[in-house]
Length: 226
Image 1 (tube, rainbow, N blue to C red):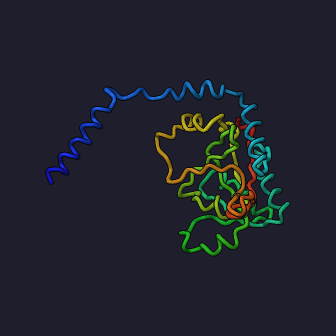
Image 2 (tube, rainbow, N blue to C red):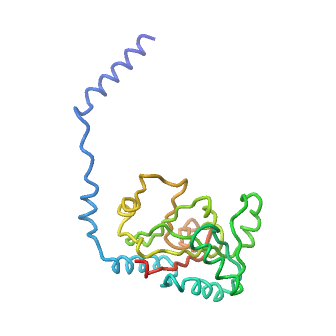
């Protein structure tokens, strides 16, 4: 027993002797990103985001505050879809609930525990609409923060996922997005980073789209909000 204690003490003594006298200065992350990615104009960020997310097989439609429900309807009708899942209680969900049924689109809402309607969600829900908290230009990435009104499964299960994005919330980098949106003040249970429809390269290392989750991703880019 004494030999074991002595060995432990010797190990701890060596660790203490090799420890630096004071903690190293934290890296200057903000300065690094400022040099790495100089700030771009809003138009440049929008163009960069659009180019990159379209390269990842997403479809982008430019809309306004007034006409996005009409464009949403057009997107659904072009695919012969007459039903969509919405988030009641969100601003975009309430607008869609008012606008779509008169145009012949049935609207369902995520208002029950998943156990009560799992089969319907996975087999009879062709499309969903969610909002995006922000986006990253350099990677063409949407940032979603699921919550009780707009749960995570809304963006993961329906074959067609439609996202309404405020173009004024497009940031150059992930770092800029985290700071501008003040992530350290509180994070959701899940923060989703979405760069195109679902894809996998597990089968013979060949990239395939739509293997699981949404087969299509459509972004309604609200540029008049920039």
